[in-house]
Amino acid sequence: DPSGSLAEYEKAIWRRPLHVEYQLQTARTLFALKQPDKAEVLLKNSLLMNPFSWFSRHELASFYFASERIPEGLEVFKFGLDLRTDKTSEVIRTLVIAGVKRPDFFEAMPQRSRCWAILGDFLKELDDFSAAERAYRRGVEAMQSENPPNANIVWRYLDLLQKQKRNAEALELLRIALEVFPENPSILSRQGVLYEGEGLRDRAIEAYRASIMLNPNADWVRKRLEKLQGD
Image: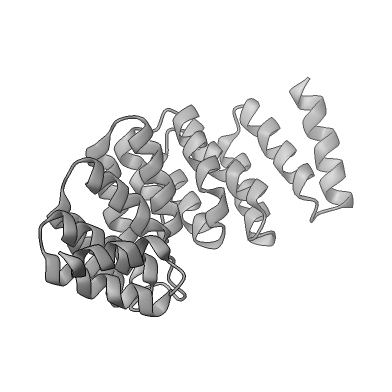
């Protein structure tokens, strides 16, 4: 009986007003009783009192989705992911279950390269390569302003470009990456491989040399460098 449950939860909240679970259960009961306005107030108060509670944030976003207030739900998640990038996959699953249109997923992502990388991977798995690339590009933009920056997005986007044999764009991506990570031997070595594939021997040698200076133990890079210098 929802009405009986509501009375019990209201008593529980009176005894322990900061207890998140009691607040959320009461909000769910109010929603079931067709009292969405009261449910929303309680859910907002729960999040206000527990701003780092992912359960409260998830409940409020889910409430908005169930009420067909998609933009508000996306905004709740966007703010939350800015604090908890590790919840990105969970947010994507929730959006799928809620029936949110795929283009709207972008509105739930903050300027965090990790979030964009995970969204891009999700879209790539669905063979939506155009949307995946859009997500990866947003991630590269975010990476450039992060402190500290994370190179993971570079490898995700680079993999997509190379599989599509778009080497010129891959080289431009690595150029941007080197502005952020000027002493990253992995980026330099990948740059060398791409230059070599494009027949740009001198540039490949330069990139391999720079990589070896930073990581002398990279035998495969040394072998490619020696081969180019011997040709």
